[in-house]
Amino acid sequence: MKNRPVHFEIQADDPERAKKFYEDVFGWNIQKWENDQMEYWLIMTAPKDSAEPGINGGLLRRPAKAPAAQQGTNAFVCTMQVDDYDACEKKILAAGGIVALPKMALMGMAWQGYYLDPEGNTFGIHQADPNAK
Image (cartoon, rainbow, N blue to C red; front, top):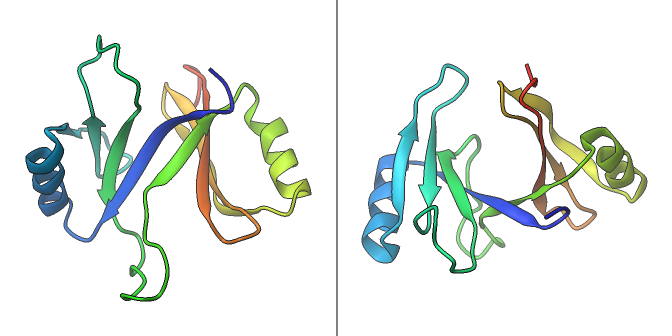
């Protein structure tokens, strides 16, 4: 599966409040991921062996103030899995996208970065790489 959404992220002012909301409403399993890089919760929308369609995600503390009511969308960020991070970034930039958060290593797991499309929508790209550091 490449160039398809594989992960979403929810930003929250109060991650514990958001965790409770999504667990209570949708029954998602949300567990804090213990690491030294960032405060992050992993969201499992269904059991690992589920045959139902869907993706899993993450929850993190909002890094900036959310738009006020009636000021546009405040939504989940989708991330696409790609085969070659650097080649995909070149395509994004050539097509008019801009870097929102530059490429970073998710230690021992992957390369991750965030971009804005020409309409200002945020999305992520993710290249699995166990050697990322």
